[in-house]
Structures are given as structure tokens and as C-alpha cells.
Image (cartoon, rainbow, N blue to C red; front, side, top):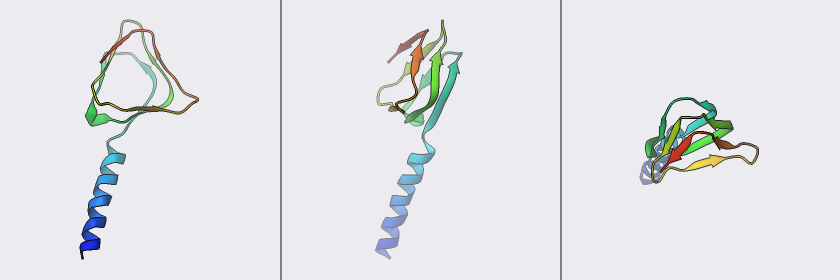
Length: 79
């Protein structure tokens, strides 16, 4: 019984981690805020913050990208 309980707890945390990630790709064309609740942010394709647009990245946010993608800032970003 105890092993089942521990397995369920572990499964809960794994599912929560998978569901809380946010995939990002393409152009960001309006002011955007990346929050800890949406973290980690997975850059799945080339991503551009357009001119005159601000990307705010809150403290603690994790950003992950593969080696063949990029995040380009033509606008601005703040933390």
C-alpha cells in the first residue's frame, strides 16, 4: 500500500511538470510575460520578439532550446 501511495505521488509530480511547460515558436507580436507558472518555456522553433515589443521574463523562469533554434530580440526584454 505504501509503495502504491509513493508511486501515485511521484506520478502526480511528473504529470504536473509535463503539463506546466510552454512551447514557444515563431513571432511574438504583442507584449508578453513569461511566468513561473508556464515554466519551463521550450523554444521548439526559431522565435522572434518583434520591434517595439517587450518580452518580460520573470525570476525563476527556465528557458530551454535545442541547438538548432534561437530566440532573437528585435524589440526589448526585461527581467
